[in-house]
Every structure is written in structure tokens, then in C-alpha cells.
Image 1 (cartoon, rainbow, N blue to C red):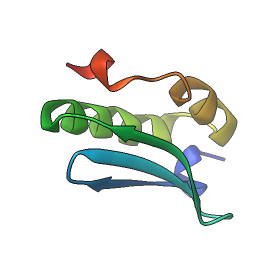
Image 2: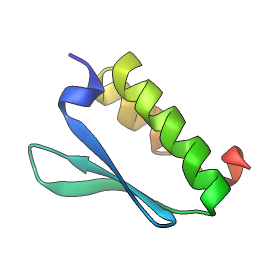
Image 3: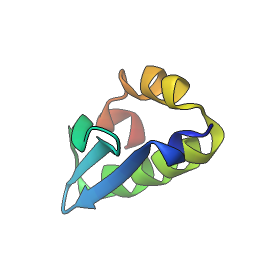
Length: 69
């Protein structure tokens, strides 16, 4: 099972939220600049297709927007 089947990525202005479809609640949230938002959202979407739900949370739980400057 891929993470895409469990999580949605919501991008609104300069925030990104990952929402668990089963629970209907946000599990990850970041405030970022517009440049960071674009790069981070692209990386999140790639990983939704590449990783399992557990791997996805493990990888992204420590992510910081400054990594995407």
C-alpha cells in the first residue's frame, strides 16, 4: 500500500498540511515561504507515490521547510 491511499496533502497559501484520510485529522503541518512551499509540496507528492504510509510519516516527521530553500 502506498502513502497516497492514506494521506492527502493540502497546500493553502504558505502552509502545508498532511491529512490522514481515515481519521480526517492533520498529522503533519508546516508554515513556509512560497519557494519552500512549492519545493516541499513537490517532494511530498513524490513520496506519497513512493513510500508506504509508515515510511512516509517516518521520513516527513523530521522535515523542516528550511531544507527546501
